[in-house]
Each structure stands twice: as structure tokens, then as C-alpha cells.
Image: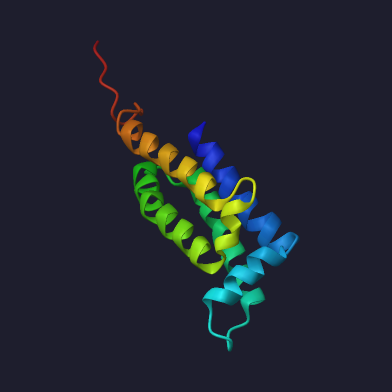
Length: 127
């Protein structure tokens, strides 16, 4: 269930606010972090594509332990960058701090339990 949840979250966050709706807050945060010469709208679009691809990787990549570990590094960085780009987002409902801490904790749980999930490859059978 955690796998499907992470897949959904990454694909939704890439598609809806970044590509489909082009949320002004997403573009504003990118504008605040990037030099003026770079088109923030294009960067947000590319980030959306990346998030959708990462969500698809969650569905098809079998060694999810490494995806959980990657997220343990990514979520603090994403949280910090959102806060640095627009400190006012901390006052919004479902803000990046609470959202990313929740996903970070789920990633810790995933790391803990992903090694113990039985597979056909590790199955020991007796005759």
C-alpha cells in the first residue's frame, strides 16, 4: 500500500500543480530560487515530468528499499528548498513541512520493513 501511495503522491504532485494547473505558487517558488535568466515555468514543467517518472518508477522498480533511502535524502531537501523559496507556505493548510515530514516518516517505515518482505526469490521450501 505504501508503494501505491508514494506512486500516486509523486504522479499527482507532478501532474496537477506543476503541469496541468501550473499553480502560481509553484512558479513563484521556482522564480525565487533560480537566477532571472532561467524560465521558472519551464523548470516547474520539467520538475513535474520528473515527479511523474519517479512515481512510475515506484510501480515498476523492484528494489524499493533504495527508493525509500532516496526519499529519506530528498524530503528534507525538498522541505528546506520550499521554505527558503517561500517562507509564507508554512502558514498554508497542508504545507510542505507537515506534508514532507509525513512522507519522510512513511519512508522510514518503508526502509524498516522493505527488507523483510518475502519474495519468491527468497522463499525457502521443504519437500
